[in-house]
Every structure is written in C-alpha cells, then in structure tokens.
Image (cartoon, rainbow, N blue to C red; front, side):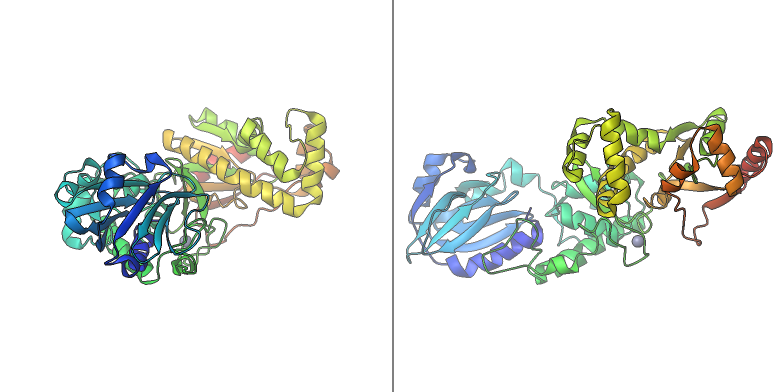
Length: 461
Ligand SMILES: [Zn+2]
C-alpha cells in the first residue's frame, strides 16, 4: 500500500507531466471509484486545466482551473499511468484524455481507490479530509502536547500510528520502521508511553519519512510509482518484512506478530515490553521433569501452559491443517495416526520442510502465548523449543533443567519411551550465555530436593 513517501513520489513524477494540460474527455469504467456525483464528475472535468498537484497524508489533490480540486486516494494498489498508447488495460478504472494526445490512466486491480471532485473551497469541509491528523513528515517537537494527548489511549501504539486522524500518511511499513527506530514495542498501549518515547516517535517519523521521500519511497510487492521508476527506500528498511532475519543492532531474530489484523515485525529485544516479560519459562530435554515443575507452579497459584499441547490443538484447526498440507505435500491430519506417522517421517528426513513448518507455526504459537501472558499476572509456560523459537523476551526467568543420561533414561523408562525414539527428538538447548534471565537447575537427585532447590531459585532475584 502506498504510504506518504510513495504518494509524494507519485506527485513528483506526475506534476511535470500533466501541468498546464487540459482534459478533453473522461471515461470511468468503475463507477464506485467516484465518491462525488458521477455525472458532475464526468461533465465538470471537461476543459479543465491541471494547475498544480498537492499531497496531504496519503491523499493527492489535483488543482484544476475554475477553482476545482480532484481528490484521489490510491488505497491498496492504485496507480497512475501517463501514456499515448494502450490507453485501457484490464485494471483501468478511469482515463483522463489530455489535449496533447496523451492520457492519464488510473489503474487499480483491487478497486479500493477513490476520487472526489469538488470546488476548492469545499475541500476543507469534507468529513474525510477534516478529520485527518497532522502530517507525519511535518510533525515537530512543538507538536509534543498534541501527540501526547492523541496517543493517551487504551489502544496499541501500532494501531495508533496507523490512525490517520492522529498522524496522516503512516501505513504498515513506516509504522514498523518508526517503532523499531524508537525502540518501542508495537504491543505497548499508547497511554503507557513516557514523554521521551513520544519525542522519539516524533523525531524518527520525520527522519524516516524524509529519507524515504528523498529515495523515492519503497518499491514493495505491488507498489511501483511508475513503470521504469523504482523507489530505493526498500533497501534502507531496517525492520519491516525482515521476520526471521537478525536484528543488526542486537543479534536477536526479528519476530512477526499480528496487531489489529496487520502483520507487524519487531525486535523483541531492542523493543522490549516489560509487560510481557513476566512469565516463568521452563525448558529442557524430554524426561527432564518439565511437567513436574509446571504442576508444582500450578500448586503455587500460577496459570500454566504447555506449548506442545497448544501446538497439538493448533494442528486441529482447519486453516493450519490446510497450510501444513500444502507445505508438506501430504494430507496433514493430526488426529489420524497414520497421517501423523507420515508427517513425522518427513520432518525427520527433510530439514528444509521442518524449518518451513516451524517458521509457520512459531509465530502463531507466539501470538497465542503473548495473548495469554497479557491476561495473567502469575503465568508459567513449558516451551521445549524456547531458545530455538527465540521466545526469551517473554520471560522474567527461564529454568533450564539439566540431568545426567542415567537419570533421563530411568525417567523415560517410567514413561515407556525408549532410548532410540528419544535420540530422534530435539536436544538442542543452547542459549545465549549472557542472558541473565536463564537459571540452570539440576534434576539428578530426588524429587523433594529438586522442588526445594527450585523454590529457592524462583524466589531469588
Ligand atoms: Zn534488536
């Protein structure tokens, strides 16, 4: 979706092409494109000359002769095309024929874009224009009180940055970039931000948007400012779309979650949110006593979660079944033992497929856990793959259970799991040794001593 820098780029490309040209004919192929009266739109545009082109937020304002303004919003995939041939293509919604033999064609495959024609003096009274907030690239520290007041809401900061009535022009790309640069977690509530954090948003919005404008915006997915013209800012993106990659600032993996239905990339370490860093994490090899500790925490009043169980329940969801069937090229049905065995074999032999499945399921598990953490103050979670999935940021303390081989085999024998099967299971518990939240606990002795030691470590700060 074109955001402020991309719309600015469209403006800069179009203006020299259409300035002083007169419209000779108008064709509209998709009536709902025009939000003002359609007949007036077609009739009143004839013989109007393009005088200027302005932008506010993500809106374009074509200034015309006789005091008319044509307002245009590109929404998801709207594009202008200036051409003297092939006027109409499949996605063309409207064509403005010009007096030099060229035409300005508006193409929009998704058909979400809109136009509105009115007299200049009416523009400022239009509801959808009146409610626009301050322009995101024009905001300065003198607007601090304005922004502080607008952000003082019980809503996530990511959603507030996308709200055009607060700051106009920011969409998904630049919201993620501004929050990363400001080291603010996208899940934080607007009202929880302190003054310095709000000032950082103002400063970074200006720096990032100015830089993106200078580089012609970002060329991503569907957005191209014009045929043969590519924005360069996508090469300068620090965070947006980089899930799974390493944060250049701290070395943690970028995570992707969904906020208000919008994909959101962030670094859980640089953009730490202490509201989420309150769970007790338990990890360790199979047969090490994770469930024993979890049940002990339940007795202490904690709400407990077992990630394996959560994932197994997720596997029963239709949309997840479908996606995993597509990834694995086999019918994925977790409730069917035969299908489960086939899938297990694929995952053991095909490392790439295994990674693809993990890359898909971890963010879903992550969202689930974040949601549960936000609802519970005393919460403990068993996550066998805690370090591999890079979930460290959710926990104030992570217990890694260690035990010797002898003890592990005896525990597993009690559970009728044989050694051969055990060796096939994941045994990678390597973690960052600088992580001060990690506590190692040994489980080689008897249960009573294990739990007593655990209680001491849990209460130690
Ligand atoms: Zn980082």
